[in-house]
Image 1 (cartoon, rainbow, N blue to C red):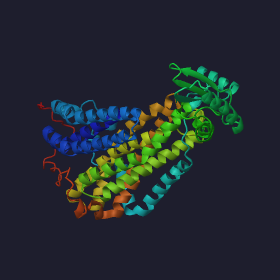
Image 2 (cartoon, rainbow, N blue to C red; image 1 turned 90 degrees about the horizontal axis):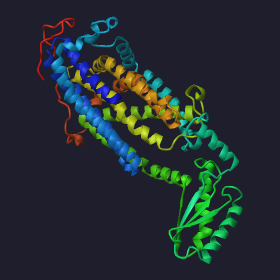
Image 3 (cartoon, helix red, strand yellow; image 1 turned 135 degrees about the vertical axis):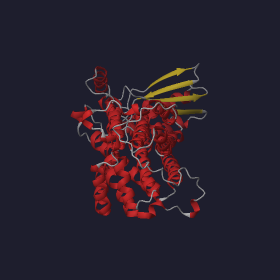
Image 4 (cartoon, rainbow, N blue to C red; image 1 turned 90 degrees about the vertical axis):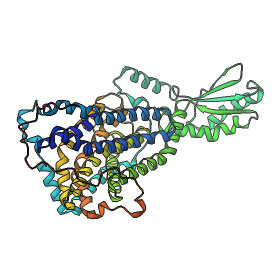
Amino acid sequence: MAVGIDYSLFYLRRTREERAVGHSTQQALRIAAGTSGRAIVVSGLTVMIALAGLFLTGIDVFSGVAVGAIVVVGVAVLGSLTVLPAMLSLLGGWTDRGRIPWLGRRRTAARESRFWGLLARAVVRRPLAWGGVAAAALLVLAVPVLSLNLENPGLHELPPSVPVVRALIDIQQAFPGGPEPAEVVVTGQNLGGRQVSRAVAALHGEVAATHGPIREPITTEMFGNDQVLIVSVPLAGGGTDSTSNNALATLQTQVLPATLGQVPGISYAVGGLTAGNHDFDAELAKTVPWVFAFVLGLAFLLLCATFRSVSIPALSIGLNLLSVGAAYGLMVWIFQDGHLQGLLGFTPYGGITPWLPLFMFVLLFGLSMDYHVFILSRIRELRLGGASARQAITGGIGRSAGVVTSAAVIMVAVFSIFATLSMIEFKMFGVAMAAAVLVDATVVRGILLPAGLALLGDRAWYLPPWLTWLPGLWPETAPPSPPAHRQHPAQPDLTHQSA
C-alpha cells in the first residue's frame, strides 16, 4: 500500500512540476519518465533485492513472504511506469483540478520547500557540527540494542485480558512445565525390549539428579506397531523463555546421551515447542550474516551503477544502517524494557521476537532507499545541469521535500496501524518500522545526508577506474530546460492528450 502510493506520488509530482513551468503534458510525462521513472525502477529493484535476501534463510515462511512482497513491489513499479503515465496523458490538465483551496495554487509550481531548503543550507555551511549532533542522537537511540534479548513471547503474545491467555497462565502456574513438554522421538528395533526400558528408567534417575530444569512426570507411548517411541519430558519455564531453553540444553547434552544414547541400534531426536523454536532460531542466526552480505553487496553495486560513484552507495548504506540501529534500539527500549506499555497496551516479557530484527532489516533497508534514491537523483540532476556541489545538495533536498514528506507520512501511517493490533509481534513491528521511516525522512534526509555530501564535496561523484565496467543506469545529461515562455500554473492545459 505504502510503496504503491509512494511511486505514484513521485511520478505525479514531477509531472505537475514540469507542466507548471511551461512544458506540455507530453513533454512533462517524458521528463518524468526519464527522472522519477528511473528513480522508481532503481528504488523498486533495491526493495526487491533486499527482500530476496530472505530466500537465503532457507525457511519456508520467509521465502513465502519474500515471494509475495517482491511480486507486490514489482507490480507497483510496473503500474507506475505504464498505467499511471497513460492515465496522466489522458487526463492532461485535469490532474490540477480539485485543489484544496487553503493550500493555494502555487504549491504545484513551488520549486523548493522553504523549511527544508533553509535547513539544508544551514547543514551545508557547518556539516561537521550538524552531522555530528544528528549521528550522536541516533547512536544514543541505538544503545539499547546492545542488551537485545531474542526470545519468543509465549503466553505474552496476546494481552492478559484475553480469556484464553488467562486460562493458560492459570494452567502454567498450577502445573509448571506441563503444557510444554519436550517430545523425545525414539526410532529403531526392539523399542519394547529390556535395554530401552532400562534406559527410560535411567532417564527418571537423571531427571532427579538435575534438581529442577527437567521434571517429572515422564511418560512414554508407543506408535506405529512399536516402531516409534515417544518420551514426553516436562521442562521448567514457560516453554519459550531462557529457563526452558536451558532445560532443553541439559536434556540434549547431558541426560539423553547418558541414557538413551547408550542403547545400540536406536536413534532419537527432540521435538516439541521449545525444541522447535530453538532450532528455528538457531537456523535463523546461522544465515543472518549471509543475508546481510547479500543485501548490502547487491545494493552497493546497483547504486554504483545508478550514480556512477562509490561514495554515494557507501554513504547511503551507512545512513540506512544507522537508522535501522536506532529503530532496533527504540524497539528494545519500549518492548523489552517495558516502557510505554500502558499507552501501547502490551505486557513486556523481557525479550524481542527472534525473527523480527532480520525481517525488519530487509524491509527497512529497501524502503529507506526509496527516499535516498529519489533525493540523490534530484541532486545529481542539478549537478549535471551545472550547479555547484553545495547548490545541488540544497536544491535537490528542497525540491524533493514535498513529495518525500508526503510519502513518509503515508508510510508511517500504514505501519502505525500494526501498533493498534493485539499481538505483541505486530506492535513491535509497527512501532519500530514507523519510527525508522520517520527518522529516515527527517533526521537522515534533512541533516545527515546533506552533511555527508557536503563533507565529500566533488569526491561524492567519483567512480574508480576498476568499476567503470558497471553499466550506466542513468543518462549523463540533465533534463531539458523549461520553455522561455512559461505557462502560468493557474491556466492548466486542458487539451486532450492521447495515451
